[in-house]
Length: 111
Image (cartoon, rainbow, N blue to C red; front, side, top):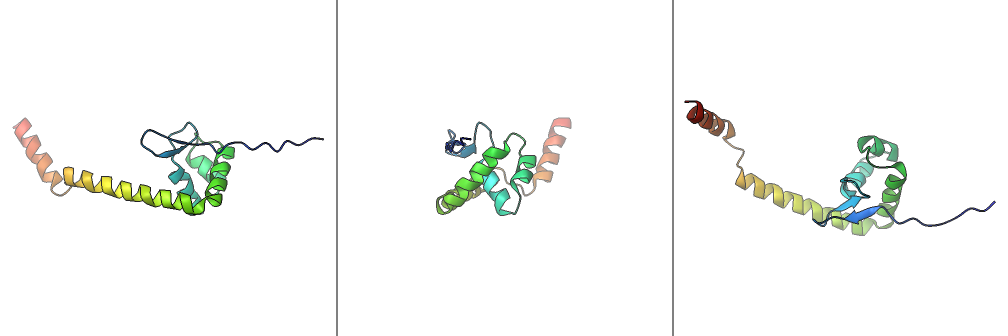
């Protein structure tokens, strides 16, 4: 009996926004790693993200464990980017007083 030990590439790609995604899905590396760090098993992650295959999830988790410092630095960078975008959006669309503004708009339009 012959067993092949061919190594498959890690199913990760970088999209146009420099976000690392798993395979040809929209699921981010961050999502899989964060779920794993919260204690979810690969099978639970597969239930959460049905577009991912179990083999790909295990491959991503293995890659994370082998490249932990680099992946964690990437995830910290992504976290800072998300916070920056959140701040920009909150400044652009101030959530305070939104009900009052919507009621005023409704009153103007429906008179």
